[in-house]
Amino acid sequence: MSNDTSPIVWLRERDTTQPLLILDEQDSVGVALRALTPGERVCGVEVLQRIPKGHKMALQGIPEGTPVLKYAQSIGVASRYIGAGEQVHTDNLMFVDTEDEALSDQYLTPVQPSPTDTFEGFHRRDGRVGTRNFVAVISSVNCSATAAHTIANHFSSAELANYPNLDGVAAFAHGTGCGLADSGEGFDNLQRVFAGLATHPNVGGVLFVGLGCEVSQVQSILSVNRLQEGPLLRTLNIQSCGGHRKTVQAGVDIVNDMLAEVNLCVRKPASASHLSLALQCGGSDAWSGITANPALGYAADKLIRQGGTAVLAETPEIYGAEHLLMRRAISADVAQDVLGRVHWWRDYVARNHGSLDNNPSPGNKLGGLTTILEKSLGAVAKGGTTPLVRVAPYADRVTEKGLVFMDSPGYDPASVTGQIATGCNLVSFTTGRGSTFGSKPSPCLKIATNSDMYNTLSEDMDINAGTIVSDGESVADVGERIYRRLLEVASGDRTFSEQHGLGDNEFVPWQIGATM
Image (cartoon, rainbow, N blue to C red):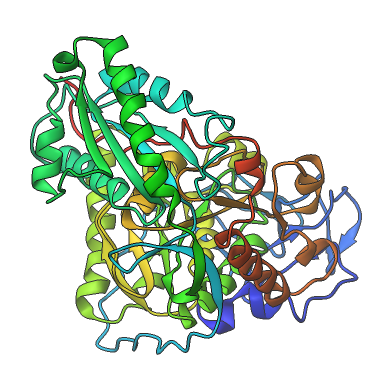
């Protein structure tokens, strides 16, 4: 968003005596800070019906077919006349498709970083720096998923007690790898995920486990991605090993052979420029675009100014706000790439008899979000304000510094899997309804959008951004807390999701195409 429409600017000036949040003087709706009851007057308007906390109230009469404005942007049109003081939600707000943004002839200059901050990380031979140190057991196909899990599960905390520099042995198993075409978008996605995980800075050793007859052949994965077998990159094949039990025993022996060498890598000081942060949201509500997402955007901006990278994703959840990203592009090619991915998704959804406006979930709507346009305007705030330097295919390696957009579904596990494959060594996850998401091999920091949910799920939320509304804390102050906590997590502090052991079942490569 431009500075004149950003809730970051507005919240510094809001009238704290009113129970209604008006994000911009152009807006035709405000957001209820508490439940509003019929008959009371709020911001000079009589409330006509009960309006739940977090939901929208019309500030003026809105004729049928007129755009409804929030953040000074259209979030849909009135499907009937809406009276001042009425709730604005699914019964009177209608999604309309957006027109394409015209390409500009003016583009932004990338940030010139000035790195000063550091963290304690694992330095790899290719120059990258990890925030964790895992041995990854990767199944090439669902048929070898149980073998991969069984091998990894052998290495309990007791088994690893003599290897203090290891964060664990983790299985990366999934539901695909066969019954798909051996070329095309779906196959390419999967290959990039495997390559990104096998070469990830948070991974010190890799064991691929295949069945033998699958489409996604282990040796093909290595060949296509120019990966060389060696002491810290090994492969197994169930059919060649003689079955499940023998494969598991061989896998345990191979990992045991890796542990001592992987443990030799110790944490040392590193520039914050080596951090790549995945920006993610899930279980969003009306507060997401007001509190947690802008605060995370502040932290992302700060990391980028340190020479780091922030990776925004979830293409269906920028739909309707893509123009805001296009205006931040560093070139016409980058702006066109944003538009190209939106066009691809329009076609993809239409082929599958869906609508991009199906994206807001029932939980999103209970939390006050009505259309995908409204959700997207809040979601892009995670990307901060710096120039957009690249649009990356799903799971493609990201080497650029600055803000990158990666194409992905809005489904969080699939999106985060792709972001990690790009090289993200940290994950940030804002949530309004509440989420217990976690990820491996990159730690996930969860950020609550509202204080009520934070207090209810306090054992799962690492940061409370709801204080921006409940306590009057500034977006900048919360953003600074997020940034500092990310540096601590990068240096080894464990997030709640790590403490709870989450991340083993959240490896979900994005599947495109027919399952045959």
